[in-house]
Image (tube, rainbow, N blue to C red; front, side):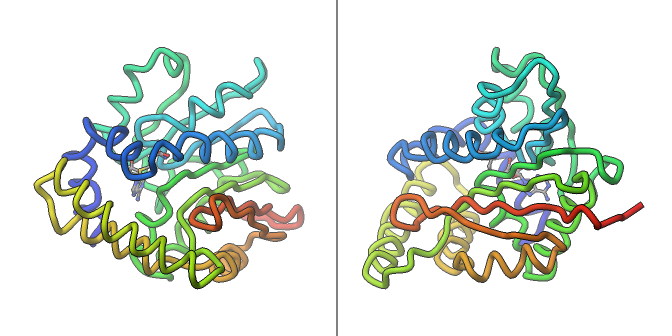
Length: 238
Ligand SMILES: C[S@@+](CC[C@H](N)C(=O)[O-])C[C@H]1O[C@@H](n2cnc3c(N)ncnc32)[C@H](O)[C@@H]1O
């Protein structure tokens, strides 16, 4: 799918996005995000960016760990998703930016922490473009700044992986059809999960995007992974 098609998809699904997520993940998306937010917030710092924030679920989880000295910025390229985030009481004091992950409107070395939850598959228009987006996250991070990415992954066990793919085919596509007339988009969503990178392949993408110390933590038998990496302190984009 092209970037404009992805934008259109979120325009159509925005009102039902959270409900579809809850159904497809059997409610697990919430504890998964909470684990990522807890891990991310332990990095500390005063400037945090939640990229591809959507309707703000990750920002709400990050907010529960935020100190008075920390500023959280949420960014997404879908106005409709941001408008839903804006209606949430927990997010009323949070800065929001309409921004494209491939071309962020932030200066080099601005943030201590960049988080991204369940959006990396949207940036995987090609492997090269994914590296470009993560290089952009690297650019806006301060030296020693941390990236935390939570996304579906590939379970290591072949048995679990087969079951996971069958579940995605049996559940994601039909549930998607129920809430959007856009069948092509849900077909894309299904294949983007099944064909996504395994943790080692994704660590290699982080390394190519100039991050160091990539590591990952599998959740739910590896159906989801939290990846963390750091911008090297010697790295300078100025
Ligand atoms: C699956 S939603 C995830 C939303 C949220 N992070 C969550 O955990 O629920 C993917 C989000 O990524 C956004 N997105 C996709 N491509 C983007 C891009 N190139 N730049 C900015 N946002 C993008 C979409 O608009 C959408 O809100």
